[in-house]
Picture: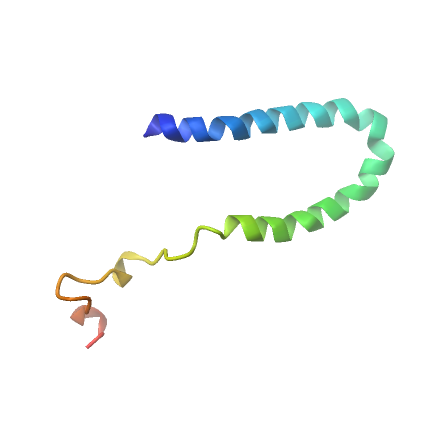
Length: 80
């Protein structure tokens, strides 16, 4: 299982490294017009992060929402 998690993070780390090298290499030549676009990229990142980071919340209820063995009602929660 640890191997699977590490394997899933590898493409992200490679992409991050290539992006970092590209930024360092391109920044001196394109500093003028990239600096103008940078605030808009940060503003665009906010809704994109909201969309992509909240996709896994569907159906994730805590252990208190799990049905009990007595047919789905849990008397300790007050579901009578």
